[in-house]
Length: 140
View 1 (spheres, rainbow, N blue to C red):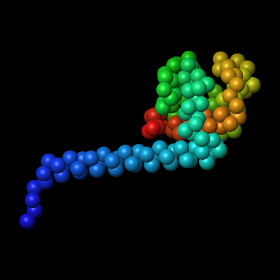
View 2 (cartoon, helix red, strand yellow):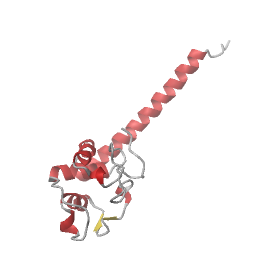
View 3 (cartoon, one colour):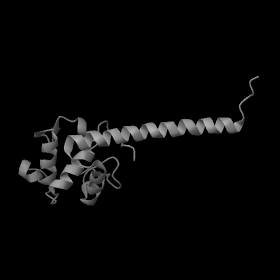
View 4 (cartoon, rainbow, N blue to C red):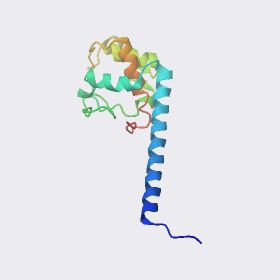
């Protein structure tokens, strides 16, 4: 004989579904971060923090970076899927790092300053930016 589900059984089922959904999001995030690391040789988790430390959010909106909601420069959501960086470089990891380290060397007319980003930090920031594929914030 089948007994009706109790309210506690329903709560458990809903909780289990929620946990499975969160685990799936975590796998998507982890995969995006692992793929970006393989692409750039950087650490996307560190890159998110470095983007904050270097003040990238004072000019750009960057999903996932606390306080990065400015619109002086273009929003960086979906940057991984763009064809060009700064309108002049094809979007490759090497070009992304070059642009992050010394924008005026790439385009002397750019408003983006050279803020002294190291090669390692540029690699990490590029890794994070390559997780921004669809314009939505990557899961934390």
